[in-house]
Image (cartoon, rainbow over all chains, first blue to last red; front, side):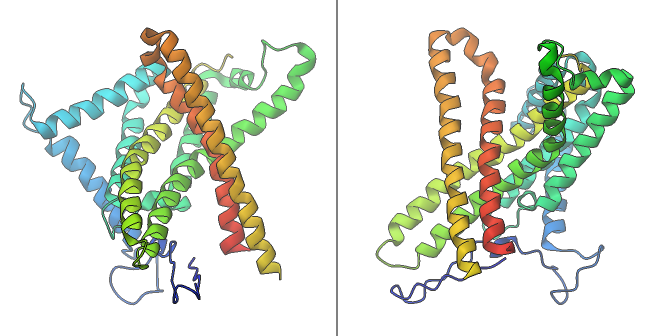
Length: 253
Length: 74
C-alpha cells in the first residue's frame, strides 16, 4: 500500500503516507511471515499488553491509602469503566466488566503507544479491530440467546411501532444488527489510520522549504488532535460494546 | 484510463467524509444548544453525545474506506 506522487514542479516531492502501516518481521529477512514470526504488529501489541500490566498491576501494587501518580491513573481508569458499565448495562452487566476493561485498556494503550514517532499502531489495521469487534459481536449474540432464549428475537420486532410497519422495521433492524461488527471495527481502524496518514502527508510537505514551518505547525496540531482521538476512539469502542451488551441483556425495545 | 477513473471516484468518495463532518457538527451543535438551556442535565448526556458522534462519523469513515479501496485495491 504505497503511493508515489511525483510533483514535477516541486522537484520530485514524494508521499508515502501508507508505508507506516506495512507489517514486516522485526528479525530476519522481510517477506517471510509465519504465524509465530515476531512482526512489528505483534511487538507493539505485546508492548500494549505490557503497558496495561505495568499501569494496572504494578501501578496499584503498593495499595497506598493516598495514591501516587501511577495508582491514581489506574484507579481513575478502573472507576471510569466500572461506572460506564454500570450506567449503561445495569448491575447485571458488571459480570462483563473484566472483558470490557480489557478491551478498553488494550485499545487505549495500543493507540497511545502508536503515537510515539516511528512506532507501529496495531489498531490501525482492520485485521486487529475486526477480531476485537467480532469477539464482541459473538459474545453479545451468545449472551442474548443464552439469557433470553427466543425472546432475544424481540430485539428485531419493534413492538412500539404500528403493526403494518413492523416487518419492514424487522428487516432494517436485522441488517443494522449484522452491520454492527463492520462499523464497530472500521470506525476504530479508520479513525486511527486516517489520523496517522494525515500526519505523514503533512510530513511530506515539510520537504518544501517555503511551507515547511506551516507544515511542522500542522503536524503539531494534528498530533494534539490524534492524542484526543486515541482516547475518544477507545472510549467510543468501549461504550458501544456496553450498548450492544445492554441490548443482549434487556432486548425489549 | 480505468486507473484514472478510479482516482476520480476516490475523490468523489472523499466528499462523503466532508458531509459526515456536517453530521458530526450537527450532533455537537444540538448537544451544546440543549446543554446551555439545561446545564445540569448536560453532564449525564455526554455518553449519548459520543454515541451519536460515533454513529455519524462511522458513515464518513465508510466513504474514506471506499476512497482507499479505489486508490489501492482496484
